[in-house]
Image (tube, rainbow, N blue to C red; front, side):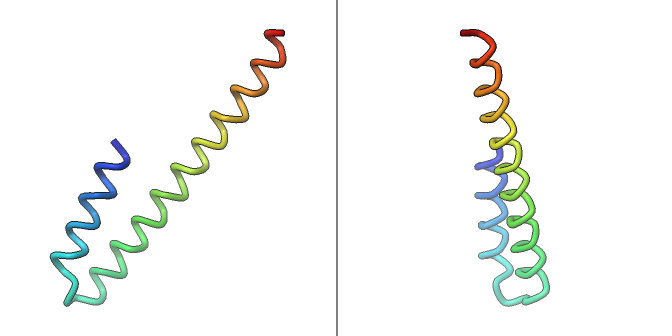
Amino acid sequence: MFTRAIRELYILRDKYRDDDATVEAIDNIIFELSTGISIVLDILTNYNKKTKKYMN
């Protein structure tokens, strides 16, 4: 789902490559999405490590 959204943003970025403000806005959106995804993955990874400790 996130990969598809980012791919669509890159397509839009390509479409509006002549408009600097739009390209910058899309770049900011891509950065925010990727940061959010990495935070969620980090939380899930740490959660799984913690639950495995209690399962043993």
